[in-house]
Length: 66
Figure 1 (cartoon, rainbow, N blue to C red):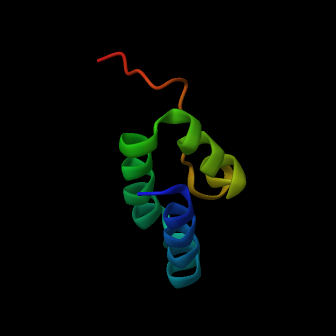
Figure 2: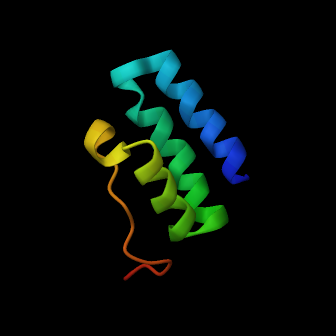
Figure 3: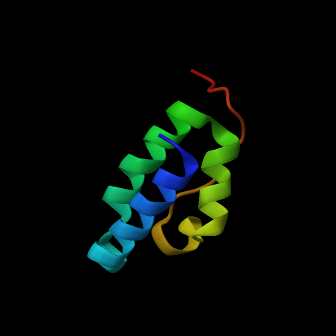
């Protein structure tokens, strides 16, 4: 997954599902986090305003506490 592909998939989900795109976007964001880390994840959250629109919060770091 590249950042460009992730952006296309998010844009597609938003145009296809509108306000109900959260589940589709969440799948993309999980893949972004796994493939590219927190920095890319947070960049997409900010770029698409995902926290406000879809309740997808930015990550604190590349490392989990589990």
